[in-house]
Length: 324
Image (cartoon, rainbow, N blue to C red; front, side):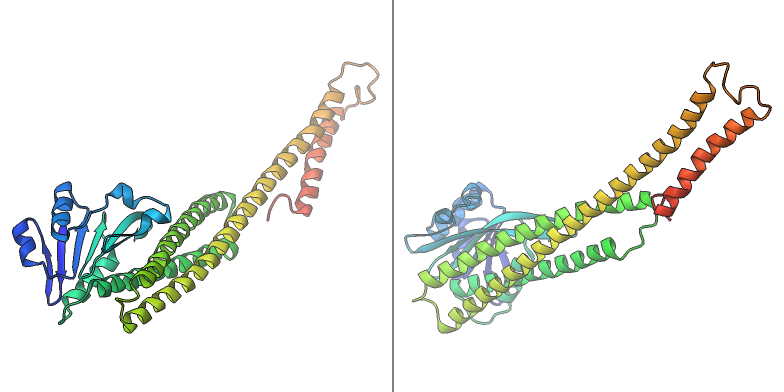
């Protein structure tokens, strides 16, 4: 989809050269999961090369941030979260003198917010103002994701350290679920960190390469965006440390549960050895066994075997190996 965003009117879809003639003055052109035909149309309208998805997926800085003719080419991966699911998708910016072109392959809440802001403006915006609005909205959205992630980690911490586990089977299920949740939280924090790193590089690159074209107000807003990104990076570092702590704690509880299992096996093995020993002794076919002709010998051996079971059980119970 090829969208044109202009102040005072909703977004308009461009499907042909005729549509393009009517929106040549728009400050923001947006390619959403474009086809090859839409990319070619955008190239003809802007006179600029449109990067492909493979180019936007490049990880080296020289491929993500560069200038070509009078246009600034920028790209970064952005995180999109839908419920408990999330994924990263590349986003490209082509910043020209009079307009901004964006290339993305999925919807982002931040882009929808900025589209409404542009439509509500009464005066024409520049491409620099549009990219600043997008950077501000994206950073705000990532901040929201990190806030929800922090709340989720607090909930996990309570589940691990404060909840009544209610038995071994429930504990086993809780720990399995906790490992999965902690792992996904770590992946999300890592993806957000990648997005913040890309946005920080974009902010610095735009400020340094378009300093002459940026007003003092825009420079101040970009400086604020850069400070927000640094503060979010600090929060991500703290979140990553908490994820690692919860992972270590969960693995520690798993180790404790494994030790408890070994205790049960030890108890079962031990209480089986002594009765077997007694039965083995009185099952030997020797004539001079003292209890061989004793009237109560059979019951004596049974009682002795029972005692060898009960006494170790009592001892293990007092040591706490058998649970509550």
